Image (cartoon, rainbow, N blue to C red; front, side, top):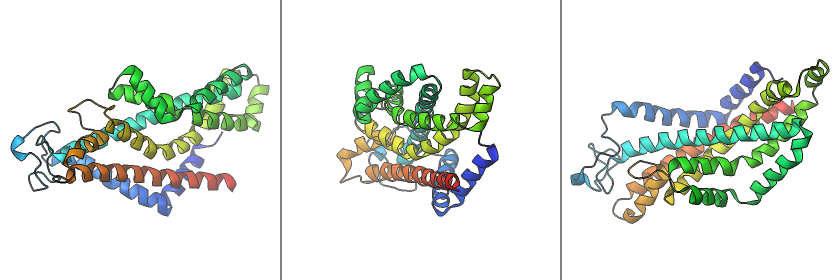
Length: 281
């Protein structure tokens, strides 16, 4: 089984590369802004001040106010935290399903064909269409949106998890465990899943930026959290009516989405490159 120091070495090499340093720096800047914001004396994200309706950036409202006089910086901070945590939750959920399905298919021959046919069925429907269908079935709401994204995004990685598990299953330490009489479930949970999970986690880092964009896109369509909760895609949707007289309502959430996505993609690419380089060496 890959050792913890080896996995730590991959992470260190990835984050020390130019891509990794750039992504990490951007992520640290975003994190600092989010951590410092509670100490800036900002109003609540849902607090309305109609006298400041569509107020431009100023010392009172650093990034301006929206159509209801709500502070854009306060809403952007809340929305960025919500989007990042939601994207991480979607990745954890879809990754867990992928590993369970992939490793089970590789371990139990009787389950292999049925599980892979299920994967084929899910992959036959474009992920965004499937997510829209699930939200349409469950109804709008942020929880339903997260469930839809989890269900629509696990299948591709399940194939990859199965391939990794089949590779690991042929390694000497797994064969030795079988010869020693270790049961299939113990091999599955200890040897196969333990070796597959770190590789799949690296793959998942590449998906984080895409999940943030999909969350924003579906929220833009009105399928995310209900008002007055702040969410980046919903903020973009609300800004459409004010592009000419209040462009900051569009610019601020757009730049935030780009920054979050760029940081996630740069870090993911760097770690993936380091892991692939380690595999080749």
